[in-house]
Length: 154
Image (tube, rainbow, N blue to C red; front, side):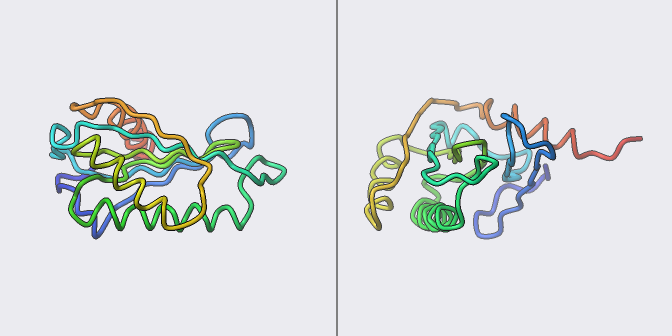
């Protein structure tokens, strides 16, 4: 992670892909929010779980479903990040589902904006989970592992 605070207009993502096709994590994207990120200003953590409707042989989504997820992610980022109400910080792609992790300033505002973005299209195969995490412990537990794993070995 860098010393710069996050700039949602110019995100810096780290991507980790698992080489083996097994029952575990296939892909993880982590946003570099910087070491000085004010987690206390984004105390609400939301997980949006998208269950894949059409799977290939490896349990990954079809091309059409990938497009729908990309459109959903882009629409939600446009709605949430315009006034810094929330920030997408991680995306897990695992067998049979994708999980979007958001940090938000306000629980009810996030839910209202999610409903507005979801209303842009057809009903989506998503479920929402919420926890308060004012210290960013969930994010840091993954981001720290990714950064350590990618550091050059001495």
